[in-house]
Image (tube, rainbow, N blue to C red):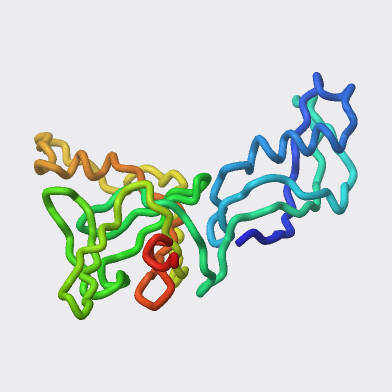
Length: 213
């Protein structure tokens, strides 16, 4: 679930921090910059593990701060594919079951990856497993807050860094047009930079309460 990733960065230490130990000041700056941030194709950064190498520090003209190239290892949340995790259901929608690990919420189990046959209750906004027994079918609800065991089957990284200005040129007589209904709202929705895709479509996976004896 957690891995150590070797990284290299140039850290700027402002003059008012010169009285501190260099390692302490650098550690604080690295955690300010990286902690709880997603690095593209790497994962969710958690905390600094250690500093392996400090190169020479430089002060550039016009800037009183020191700049130090740092080699370090960082603790990163990046589960491997097929890893089994346990989280809590934070909600359901037509897109699937949304799961949280407490510190990471961007996990979804799509409908085709649920225990089958599965059905979505529009009124209750909850997915259920229509479990067949000798006495007939029983609806096993996947309620919010329930603990769920799932397998990681895929991951999606999206580059959410700011894009540059549009290359389109405005015509001299172009009249402003209103965007289509709903388009503005969808554009304002922030995309998750890192999403895990889960599956519970095999024995032993799903709500823990289903399999407790």
